[in-house]
Length: 406
Ligand SMILES: Cc1ncc(COP(=O)(O)O)c(C=O)c1O
Image (spheres, rainbow, N blue to C red):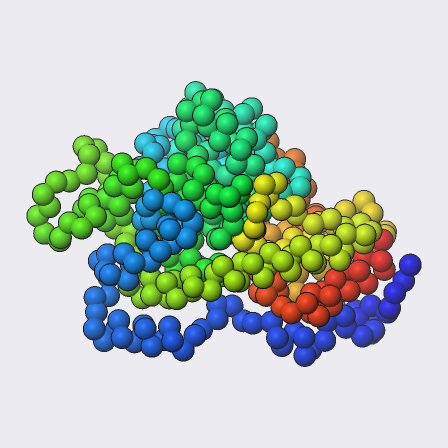
């Protein structure tokens, strides 16, 4: 069935210029936040665990349902600090998915540990619990599921493995702000949840990150790691007590300005997450009968999902001769829908991954390799804040292209 001439062949665009103009540039700047920033700049303090940082850490932890929030400079040092606080060090192994941003695996490398890349489930694109079990060795000291693009790793099964083996879990929630799994905030299910507030994220501040935990001892360790050894509420100068013997501490502190941006942004997160989630569900429903394409599944027990990307999964075997993911991508762009091929990874093939062959291990990767190289087309989260007319136009773009190319 052929619906309409494709835009790439000179036909009308499915998504009009006017509809595209309604898609907001991300991050969005708000005048009231600019005013709050100006006040903080004029009056100080600017950093050093100031009142805004303290307030945001509490607000975000409460929002997610965690007891403690430890604010840091970015979402890479949060993962490194979480591993460090859990005792991971030289020679240990850390299980990570193969399709994530470099930071998830680099965090292990920074501590002299070895990332072990493990395959993902073909539907959620998140860590496959069966593969996790198979990859565990006596050296495994942490498991890092990544809630990729907002979908959720199977936390029930991963936590079961954790309980059976005693291996702690750090949730990498850089893509999943505001999602909940069976009533629990994402980032509060494992021993530590790590979030990034880098500017593309759904809770953005330029740079920034936070660790969430329900464990007071871990919270104290995390705070000391990021604050050169000082504990919460200790004043600069001679401290009354220091970190436990041997705990190497750093300066991974954040600043007041990012905390101010985040406190304001947090007030909008619930409504934005709800809108993205509802639009994603509607969009998926609109294209469910389109041939040759699936979408990344939601987390199996997601009540609400914090979408970072909406991921289309075309099946290369169903495409006409001569049509690859590149032609699909070009045709969707021509229709007015800017998709990205592949998302991440495989991490260990990235040009920036200049780590020695013996310093990491690929345990299993068939799904990661296939998904990253040939299957996924990602749509950035700002499109999920669109009105329903634009969501329908997005569905039309997918429908037109897939009917023409399958
Ligand atoms: C999955 C994942 N983990 C960790 C990070 C690291 O966050 P940051 O850029 O704040 O260091 C990112 C950032 O893009 C990410 O996508």
